[in-house]
Amino acid sequence: MNKLPNESAIGVLDSGVGGLSTLAVLKKVLPHENFIFYADHKNAPYGDKTKEQVEKFVYDIVKFFISKNVKAIIIACNTAVSATIKKLRKEFNIPILGLEPAIKVAYDNCKERDIVIMATKLTIDGDKLKNLLKKLNIENRVKKLSASGLVELIEAENYSEVKIIEYLKELFRKVEIKKYSYLVLGCTHYIFIKNELKKVLGTKIKLIDGNLGIANHLKRTLTKLNILNLSKEVGKVELISSGTAKDMKKLNIFYEKACSLV
Ligand code: DGL
Image (tube, rainbow, N blue to C red):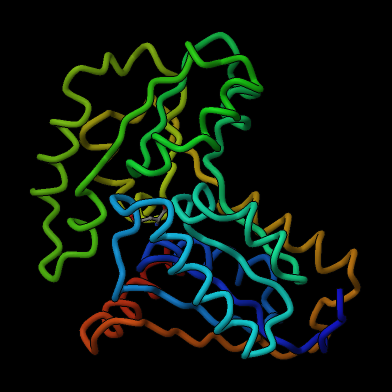
């Protein structure tokens, strides 16, 4: 692995605004680092695309980050990780960390009760999740909900809490929620709808995501490789969208929201 300057930025990517929730936590844990955030609005949402399509989108963004000399890459998108991470790590000689549904943490914290996970179709149907459940031997303990169409509601120009609540009521209609200890948020976009989830599901079920886990993992990785940014200044954040000017505006709004949540 070629060592890049400690001041080099860290690339963070998602299909859209969801990964900003990850970025806000990364920034909190590593305030002196510089970040470039890339939202692939042009190709979003990823969750209903094929594995091959998502592989190609993410490959192009990773190439872009490498052209910017980033020292590490965070895939702040469970869907992209499920579809691509193995291949990317084989191909690129740079630390690539990816978000994964926090199933293990949820299970370790409460072994006697079952878990629900909600995620995009590609994540729910993917081998990565299946293999994880198999490895932990909890295939029958995890209720999987594929939430197609929810990312579009979160990204909608006129964000509507009412529509999101309606959607969630339908998604959880047949789920007996009191049977479960944890709801794993298996898509970074869902962090922005925690209030709506609490309104629909009540406050007993605990919501869990992988953002803090990946931020701590990144800190350990940079420390181990001796590439932490040692500057005393607060790092810079550059936001990029492959979409329209409206998407760019949305990124700024959601980034502020994400920072206010951590
Ligand atoms: N935010 C992404 C995730 O964590 C995916 C959203 C999408 O594009 O479907 O899975």
